[in-house]
Image 1 (cartoon, helix red, strand yellow):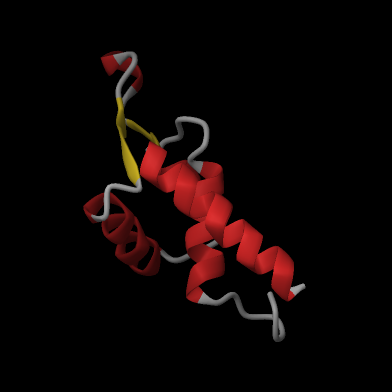
Image 2: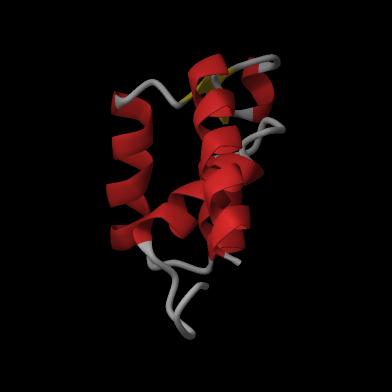
Length: 87
């Protein structure tokens, strides 16, 4: 949070990408980001569409997990560098 209490879009995207470094269920990502379902799904679909996160199914019985793609890793690293410079 650069200018106050509210997160900017980039900070929200960074948080979702950071959480997705390890495979996680969609619900877990939503709870950890402390967002409403509607708002979370807006960001989630955007990240899927841009190929920044992907489905990760290691055990079909446990359900669908999502994780970071290589493209997502690179973007997260770039975002973190920029945010570090602004702090």
